[in-house]
Image (cartoon, rainbow, N blue to C red; front, top):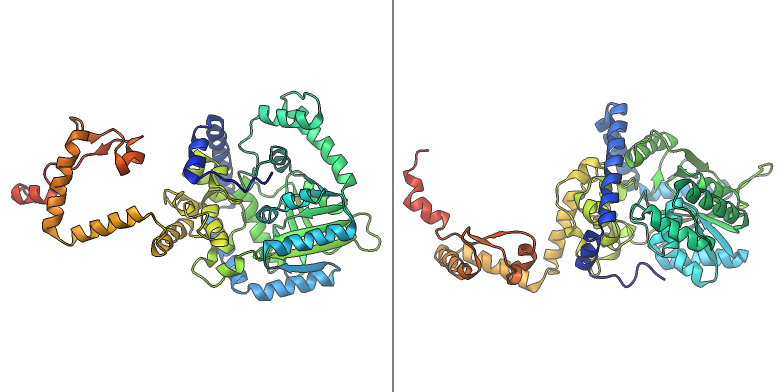
Length: 474
């Protein structure tokens, strides 16, 4: 099953999410917890805005000089004994991975969290090849068993209850398991240990690639990333081309911002730095290291007005403050990346054709921009994307005609006044004694289903001002 296909229309996805009481409560609690943790971490630093400015400067410099740092990163990966593959499209990524799997005659793959692998639907392709693919991150493992996609960048299974997890694990175990956290994590730990030991290939994402040494940096709290990279004989890294830190000193700042913004931690339980494959005398580590640097639409963003979105370090801070995400969760967005970052990034990577509704999944409150540790102007980008849709005439024809008609009326005072009076008369059969329209009415139905709509006033402000307003004291 491919979770990315056969999506319902956006309004249907939203309606389904709003009807899920558990989802809304789970998201609310998690948002509150993560926001509190981030605020505490900011206070501990003391000069958080200075750190944001430094992180923004690092990311801006990196993206503006990305070709140089990618070349340097690739050179140092190969110098350390690794192999680098540049993939322009999702198909190129899949070609490299499937080619390596056939070359190694691999039958079992263990994965650590990788959002880019979600972009290219890697799991589905490998399963169609007959390869066993197991997600080693606990949250990712849960959504894999449920044949779903992650609903949060940091907490993939935020939408699952303990009962649902117990049902999934019981089905996998072939016997009933208790709805007790310790028992469920014990089962997952035992199952993962077996999969780690038998895996032919380990596949991970990449939090950062350090250009000056060719090192791949992975952060985790479960230790699964380290096992994924050390036990299998072959390690494949799938990284977005923008995930570069020029130097270790830059990485120091970016890691501090990432962990504090994501979970409120000073540092995650595990930070793994991989520089090449296993060397002579090493007791563990892969015999081969392959790094796939993925474009998949990113170069189209470079040099354009939305370039700063490539500064993103995938912390999820914007998601944790978003009032829209708070009500609808991640799956309602329909793509790999939920929340404000997804509403901006998905249309840029994949085009408006399937994602024209996402820029409107925002209140434009600006909380996402304030929360972003690298100062991406997310709410401004959402507004700009809406303007792009209008410019490309992607908005409904009726909406465009309505605004054109309104513009024509405002340019002609007599017609505007006549239309206002006509609107008042037309609303009389539908408005109550308080002057409110509360029944579903044509194009206003989406509003009046849940809100009261004020009927047009009997007397316009201009008429009132002419008759009474000009006589009042200033």
